[in-house]
Length: 422
Figure 1 (cartoon, helix red, strand yellow):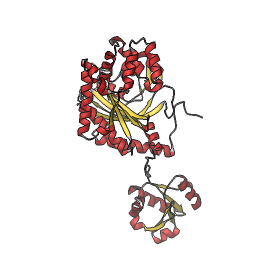
Figure 2 (cartoon, rainbow, N blue to C red):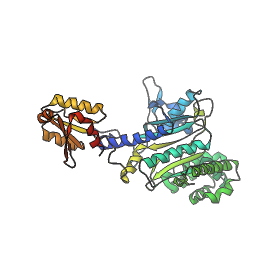
Figure 3 (cartoon, helix red, strand yellow):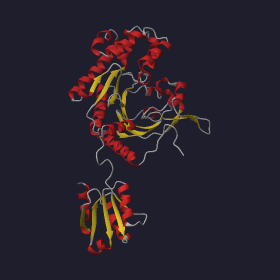
Figure 4 (cartoon, rainbow, N blue to C red):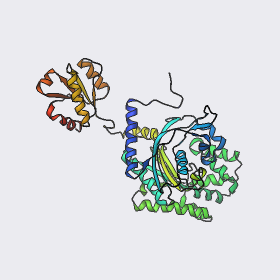
């Protein structure tokens, strides 16, 4: 029996790490005033196909199927599209609407190293604010998350869709070929520059050599004068420089880096775009401004910006750099009854009510087998409850790592919490 290709069971240590990372991210999202939103895993195909004008092509990239009533459906490929559908369906919602969403998404592509067809995203989005301050906030949240998870060496690459559109015009690419050029360049992380050159040639994009040269040169200050000849270029420069200026004001500019090679989702994004980089070329998140998406589902555009973390990639990076703390999972106390089962269960109940995670023998094993089980589960503390302990009104608390033992009076059972904190 195997899992479906590109999907994975998560259990034991792996599952605890996922719980820890998601829990830390969720706390930070809430601290910044974001509220949760849960949406269905299944959406109508037409809802999924609307993003970026994907149309029939998107069927190759998603889990597409029909239900028993012959309706076209698909599994969501991100958490933003369902939210956009939700926003369009609730136009009177107070703005800005700040939501977080953490859940599984599915993409039917060829799984690469360390990636899956079923994976988990943790998103924040702000709907209703056209201000660069909203862009700043999602970056501030992302930086806070990265620092909280223990990352010290990371960068968020930033660019702007309008700047790249102006760069195409400055390179002599006609406006009607802009979308073709966007679609080719957006594949950079998959096919590299040689592959992009082939794509541009295949799509018959003129003057592509000049465009590739300028982007690869990656010198924002050098190309600014050329971009300023176009209104859209001026807008993009203004948005990007305003973002950097505000970032300096709140002390997060050192985490940001203007990068002209950042070309993610150009057809979808409308302004500033971001990508979170840690560990060399490993991206663990990204996002940007998408002011036109809601209009695809409703009768009016709503300005929006957001950023998303890939949970699996974040965990891989944390493992690579040994960033998980010793206590990324609850410190469970294991209770071993020796004949005194009823008394042991009463003590376990008291501990749980005190907020102490407590497991207990359910197999009626001998003491040595209970020791083996507790060690296998990674439990640090072990409580022995036998006839002697009950007669004396104590429990014996044993540290399975150091072999230290301590006697605790039943009347002072809350002291167990003190030992867990050590």
